[in-house]
Length: 355
Ligand code: NAI
Ligand code: MG
Figure 1 (cartoon, rainbow, N blue to C red):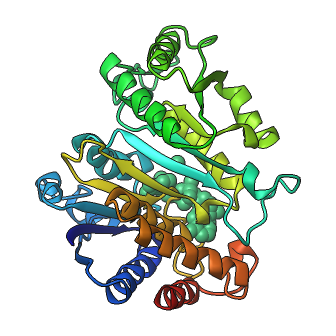
Figure 2: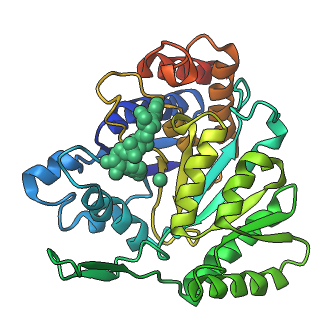
């Protein structure tokens, strides 16, 4: 089993956590024979932008297309506007490769305590399916009358039948495979009166094909509150691009923070490479200090193994992470410890060799 990976460490803590991820891949190769990864590292980030006026070369997407997988750290640096770093690198990749599913588990790992202290582990285990190619991140709109009192900005939401159906079908088929047989869809059809009623209608249509799945449609504001007050209710939560983005930072917060939250940008048809990354950004406030938590990045590798149909290796990685958390001796500051990124990565690698 041989896979090629395009590795984009990015900016800030991106390269710091990526180093630990690459160590984990090497440990998997050495300890769980048969699987091989050929990694090519791309220097596409904000420094590249400052030098070349773009985040990646003109043929960047063509280059990536030939890889089996893409691994991303995080991008964004002071001095480059965030809409440039995100719109010129991450969003084109998600769109060009039809990575229309953004999978984001919200799961409290063994050894951790949720800030929702009255909840136990079984209460905090669900997955958010975020639509990843359209919706509010449309790039359609414009600005007018700049510098006048009549200045205005318009950004359209785009919900196509094709795009909405395919994300909902994916979410329902995932719900079929999970224990609670329950799907929650985020909406806001009371306030957003064209696109969201359309979304709700398609939820109901796709639901017809999955009579065994209990479906709830919640307005996004109430749903955000339920993440705190009754997270045990959720199993699969499906949301538009923006709603899913916001919900998953909240989801990360209830299971220990952004340093622990992974994501997979999936092209389910496997026509194009899928991309795996932590959900956090480049964290300029702690970049360069060597104290970022590498677990989100490493967990994203476990998701990558699931995507490759290598569930045993996926479990080896998760068990190693959880064992280190249960031991509780080597933790980064966000987890209440004083270990460095590298020390935590080394500890996880040690567990992988022992497995
Ligand atoms: P952020 O996720 O970088 O940081 C938010 C907070 O979480 C910070 O206090 C940070 O120190 C902490 N944090 C994040 N990851 C951590 C880790 N692994 N270990 C310990 N603490 C961690 O979000 P923020 O500050 O809104 O954005 C910073 C930059 O990152 C911006 O340029 C933004 O555009 C970019 N960004 C990039 C993303 C990506 O590459 N996919 C996603 C989100 C933001
Ligand atoms: Mg986000």
